Amino acid sequence: MASVVVDVMLKPEILDPQGKAVHGALPRLGFEGVTDVRQGKRFELELDGEVTPQRLDQVRALAATLLSNPVIEDFDIRVED
Amino acid sequence: MASVVVDVMLKPEILDPQGKAVHGALPRLGFEGVTDVRQGKRFELELDGEVTPQRLDQVRALAATLLSNPVIEDFDIRVED
Image (tube, rainbow over all chains, first blue to last red; front, side):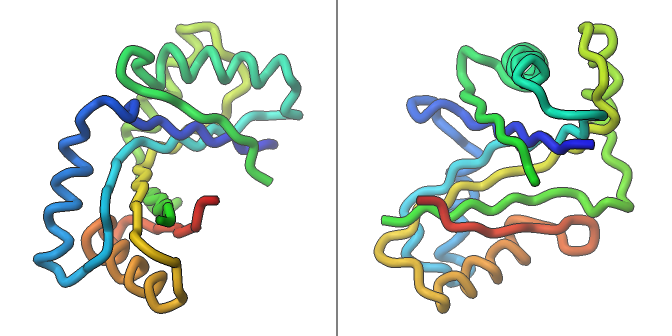
């Protein structure tokens, strides 16, 4: 059993209205000193068996097709302990 | 400038229909060997200045009130390099 995390974030040049909404709410709630907020998605995949380079390639293909929209989003994959 | 990441995931005992939908789509797309998928949110906060223990406490309060619903969600905070 291995856990693989895929983080999906909007590309930096894409406007992020959810992040902007959170950022705008902070001063009203008394939080100061936050210059930017971006909101994205996090997926935790449980794989049976070992994480091999081949399986990571499979997860990369999955992240690029099902979990993210490569036109507007970047993703990052990492194996959790 | 410091970057703080807040990961918000549904508690393990809470049903995750988004994760289940992704999981259900995997075999149709030819991905095998994934036993579970959970979907959550990832927030990237840019703070001006240094990350002090006091500011991390502030981010913790923010995560517990604005970014997550503590009844059904857990959150995790980490400082990115």
